[in-house]
Image: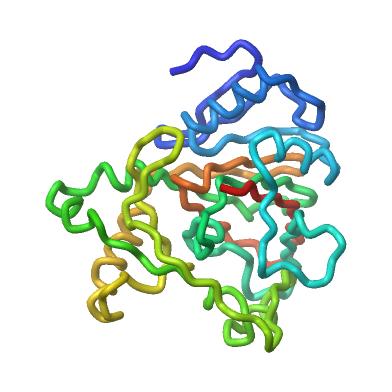
Length: 278
């Protein structure tokens, strides 16, 4: 494990996740601090900060220290700020954004590197987020199954989460494009991905965006994918984060999946998010 000089790093679970202390991410941090934050992200896959005050301009400035900002194609609803997404859950919503295991925006040709989520308003209980380590998901497969997956590509599409056919805007306060000009974004990615910074192999499918295996029928794909979906979220691969106002989560979208738990139906949950391009 790395010895950190500028920040504190406290793991929250055995599989992944660490809380970072001793830093105000709204400040103009020097390269040494940013380097340690990036190293903590690579080691722990998702990192958390508490008691932050992060106006949107400082949120974006911090995010840009790790790469260009990603503009989400399905949240472009005419707003001036195209780089920030606000995720809102209100009483009466029957669906919450992200309430299934997924990595973000994997239908893109180049997957986003990560996301930084800041809590503006949180419920008194519930609304936690779970994360799962996809290095472990791959490494714990049998050698025979690893050989089966090698070379396979999965087809990813946003057809379930945007567009008029998805019907999600009737169920939740966070709106996406559902106009008649919307077209799905579809790309194929290796089922077993290699992380570009660590060089480690990880599982890269998810039940929200993955719609099949390239070169196979839906019926042929289904047993393999259903097994992987169940396997990738085994409890021993996961951590769970309890939100408070001012909390921040920064996850590596290349080697994790996450799940927003929709278990409080009477409170507001309001989050501010940036994504970092791959």
